[in-house]
Length: 59
Image (tube, rainbow, N blue to C red; front, side, top):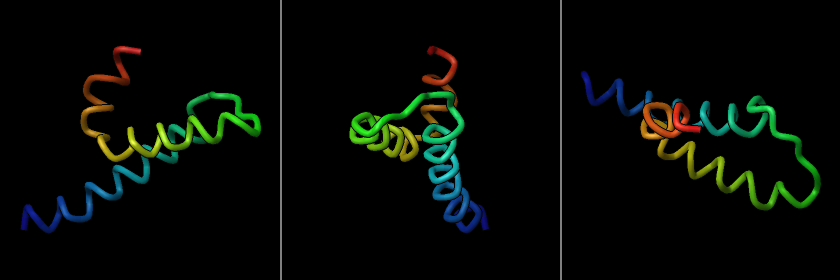
């Protein structure tokens, strides 16, 4: 049962974190920094437990 919950929770947290970082974090985007910030946001979304416990509060 626990594995089934985590099976759906982890991708949902990853997608939610990537969307939050891309659209709601307060960064201003222009045409070229989409090439830099979106891949970084997707990577941080994939390690979302580390981001929300350590990195979000450090910066």
